[in-house]
Image 1 (cartoon, rainbow, N blue to C red):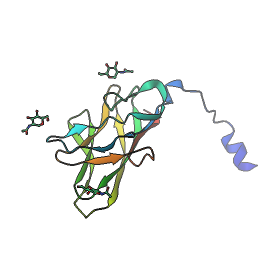
Image 2 (image 1 turned 180 degrees about the vertical axis):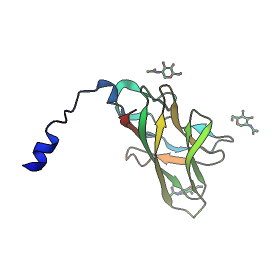
Image 3 (image 1 turned 90 degrees about the vertical axis):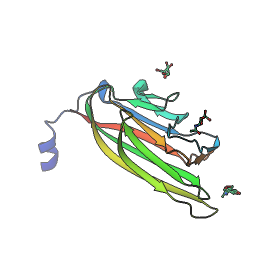
Image 4 (image 1 turned 60 degrees about the vertical axis):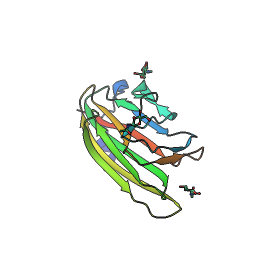
Length: 152
Ligand SMILES: *[C@@H]1O[C@H](CO)[C@@H](O)[C@H](O)[C@H]1NC(C)=O
Ligand SMILES: *[C@@H]1O[C@H](CO)[C@@H](O)[C@H](O)[C@H]1NC(C)=O
Ligand SMILES: *[C@@H]1O[C@H](CO)[C@@H](O)[C@H](O)[C@H]1NC(C)=O
């Protein structure tokens, strides 16, 4: 009862602008790559994309409001080759990365996640490093997601 009395005055206001979440898988495409230069991955199988902030044609998420955002990605690949993944801010700053080296004829997963402060119009995307490859099918082994934690 005491706790309820303390939290009761805090009202949760409806905030349309705060409802920013996207989650997508690469799609039922099998192996993607290798390419001789790094490319932005277009995660085409979209499960949620409130406010349309993620563009599945380009693979680019654009922040609609200034705030703290959380991003996560996970990639599966055939370890007869390398898989390099780079989370990019504004297509020019490599925020976090994962690198999976050749490890034999088996599928391996690599994943990373981060929180970021974004201004309106800042973009976040995931690049596949040059001369590396990645895999996905209907099981959604390879995914990318982001969401606004709170506006600033
Ligand atoms: C890289 O690949 C593209 C597309 O296949 C090709 O046009 C280009 O010549 C290649 N560049 C090099 C340096 O191999
Ligand atoms: C996604 O990006 C493409 C290429 O820039 C653009 O033509 C298209 O209109 C965009 N889609 C949406 C829904 O904004
Ligand atoms: C990985 O790719 C090689 C060809 O480089 C292929 O022979 C092998 O079957 C693939 N392994 C898996 C687990 O898909």
